[in-house]
Length: 431
Image (cartoon, rainbow, N blue to C red):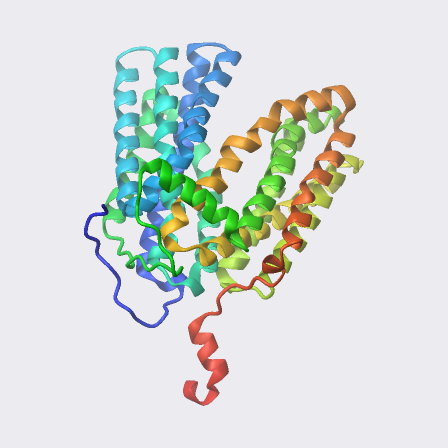
């Protein structure tokens, strides 16, 4: 059973960007993400020093296997126990693991078997960390602020992706792999004091029927049944999975091959990748600032359709600058879709199931979607980039069809902010 928790008293809604509790969590999350990015830089370069290109791929892929296999179990853990404690425990384990590796590498050369072992253990701990992170926002803020928190979290993710690699590269240049692993471990350690100060709300079930806790297997099956039967969450999860399966391989693997095919080179790929990230960051900023968007279900599916169309046509444009512009549009649409999809799931899900729901969503991204990587590469090698991009874009657009087929998705709305709602219903009260 979960340990006693510090809970938040009932009070008027505080905007998430002014809520000290949310900001402490966001800071801890950002610092931990930057530490993760530095870790992957250190792992990749250490593998490169220890072996060849094939082994680098082996080491980098090693962490994905336990993460995918154990993700659903991590969702059960996040729902059974206080998600803050799960995050604290997993961050502590990752910190100890990375600092131990740093000490070992400082004493001897990085051996391949050590790096593979580290990647496997890190991936297994990540399977606990990711679902708990997904379950925590609804426990630290109110439903009407979840969309804003989702946008803020997306911005933190982008910041971690931008800041982490340069910090890791600098540490590698100054002190080698041991220094880079040390920096990663210390950054993750910095998140721990902040996580300890986070206050969480009591768990309040939204469904009338709440099953008694059973075995871990029963809890997992119960979570899968909950997703399948939910009028809104089921179509959102399935539609999102189809979208991820159709476009992730195209954007990650296909874009590299498209640049090589067109002769745009590494700098061209850099422009396209940066444009995509800029578009995604802009959409995250929009949701973080606005905190609410009208007709969320239709807006989500509309941006998904535009993003699929952009991904299908990016291999048809003749110049790099047009490809970069399209990449920015795709990133913007992907960011709006992802943020709204996540916010709708967060607000619709019974808090008791959020860990398991998050684990299923993330499994489609880290377990299922990467399966398309070799297929996309082989298809482009056989037929070229243009037909593969078009085909993947069309396949991903099936996610739009699945979403729009659901009446619950078409009419889905985000909760309105209380203060704004009160002003609209009683204008004289604000005077």
